[in-house]
Length: 582
Image 1 (tube, rainbow, N blue to C red):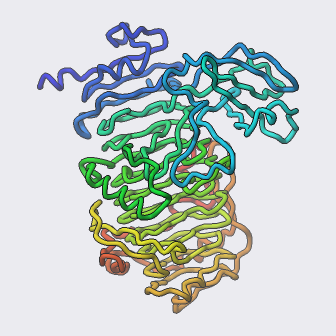
Image 2 (image 1 turned 180 degrees about the horizontal axis):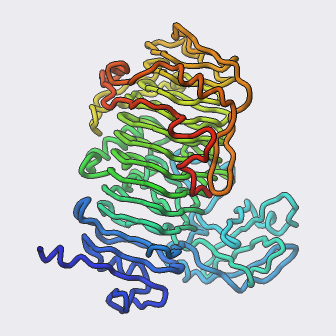
Image 3 (image 1 turned 180 degrees about the vertical axis):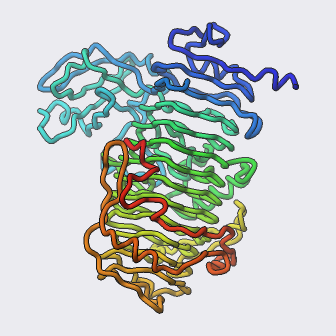
């Protein structure tokens, strides 16, 4: 055994510890950061029960998949890491409005109450927004546009508000606490920009597992800037983000995103600006062996106002599986072009599987360079705009065995897709890119640009899907590229793909819906679907059948196994992937 392997240790952290200790079980550290400062490849930082108010900034990563640094909550123990601090000393002013003066020294060099949310593709709706936040018993109040709004009486149907002003010595905060005394209740305010995020890129092969992480003053994270989230990988490779509960991030929950540089937020909102971002990223090592390759599994992500999971370029060759993402961009005080449960640019050879995404503005938004990507066995419902938005991708990419039950299922501004064995219950939009952008397609399984092309309609494959009442696929009548349609089944009233030679229809007798039962979820309605879905084209859908996409002539490298959405989401039993849904 080498000296390096002999050094593998378990470093303990506990709320009764001391950072002057050596980190043994008998003499644990007090802070996770103290353990991070000494952790080496092969070590495990084991954190015991309690609340830790800190930002963990790991100074180093592991060496490989087998020699990683692991940060883990002790089994069976509730470990919470927060970017906030509790605040007392509130004085009541009038109605339900209270006031407090917080010394600026609490914030150090970063004060969220003077830090504006801004950047490329951000729409402020004619007012200012800050990364600060105020929480009452773990739930956030809404930022007001003016002090007058907070001083006004709080109506029965209005969410409580807060407002802040920063002067030379104090941060002054006014907040509405309906039927609560903030000096007796738990009131917290954002202090830290993130909770677990390395300040340097290239901190590879970390595992973060089993924590509850919340309340961070995160910035807007467009694809052209460093994407700082409550928990993020910062242009690294090989992270495992497992079984965490992540919530109440001002913008983003998890980031598999880009580095930052002097070009951040200087794209002029242009496609050309993002192409230059991609070219600079290639110079910074974008690709296999330098970025991506992350595993994000079994997490619950909620209450983020931009995205639950975001990633520009740094999400390549990653797997996003068995997560629950909900309540994303539901306050909607600001707007923009980056909000979704999951929002990726450059999801090359990325697998997004068996996730449950609901009550978001958009469930999944795959934007630019979705190539070699597989979206498998996910459940989408109750998403406001649509379940999936596919923007300016040239493929090949695959959607198989998914259930789409929001009012709008797919918004497709892309080519080169294969849609196999899905259940689609909402409206469809299939169109050309309205801005006529020249966007890149890549060499096979690579981050190297092969060429640029505009998006038309077609170059798609629809096989063995079930379309419910109200779905209209007639937009393919205007296709300027071939469309393959085989074995699809249409509920009475659904408009078929014009290129489909033999159209199978069934009389629907009910409505598909998703209901919550205890800690799980169940898809109910129209039991005859099972019989009709069995009439779809039998056998294996493989690379030969799917053919090659128009851009670059690339094929679908991985076959689609036999099966259906029935195997992923039983229509009578609770969905297995949503057992931990919040």
